[in-house]
Length: 337
Ligand SMILES: [Zn+2]
Ligand SMILES: [Zn+2]
Ligand SMILES: [Zn+2]
Ligand SMILES: [Zn+2]
Image (cartoon, rainbow, N blue to C red; front, side, top):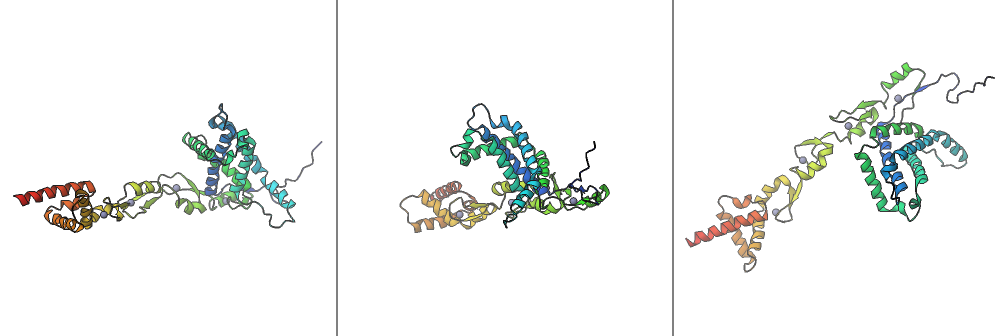
């Protein structure tokens, strides 16, 4: 006996099966892929805390598979679930279709996590402790270091999830075509189509519509130094450059005179502020028995006596002290001879 043909709910009368454009928003996919790793880490940590015989890494392979299966299944039935819910809530205005894919997937992951918590996870406020956060962070880093779940593979999962839960099609292309040829024409100009990032060294494929956002954060982007020196550097090297070698990095006067200036101006500052610096050093050398005015006079004398300009070239208290002592000895020698 033949089974009567049932109309496929996905195809409407008069149309053949439509082929959907496969492209989705690269940044959203990336962001979703990013939350999968800490999500898995939390499940592994919560499931093994207090268990001396199992570590998070011992359960990671199994839990990864289980988690991916679980959240994928939840995402598959998401549209149907959302429809049922919105019908049930018809009389309740304000009940909306959930439209944040990241929140939706987070809820799936939380639901999965709650089924995996061991007894410790349920008692004593464990979920709110700092040591739990630390353990999760550590395990995320460990998984990143060992490439346990590489970004590309997480992105493949994220892409599937995104298409399933992005009901308002903000993050994936909604276009459908009746044949491959039409689809190909569309793909060539689809705003979700991936293009290679233009920055040297970056291997990211980025949706055309996301190019600007990606470029604004791409670590391979070449930028002018933020502190205004004449160097151009990769974004990823900027912070280190600015605090270690940039000639414009702010520094405090090594003599402690309350001035601060770009590192490259140290010499100029030491020349301009020689008198106050000298006075500080002289106060330290001649601890007692000299009035402020005496020391000021002495500082001026020393500067006049210093024909080679050695004082102004001393860039810190210790070398300046040495030059001063040297000059004072010479001045005394000059007087006695
Ligand atoms: Zn498209
Ligand atoms: Zn890039
Ligand atoms: Zn710089
Ligand atoms: Zn100074």
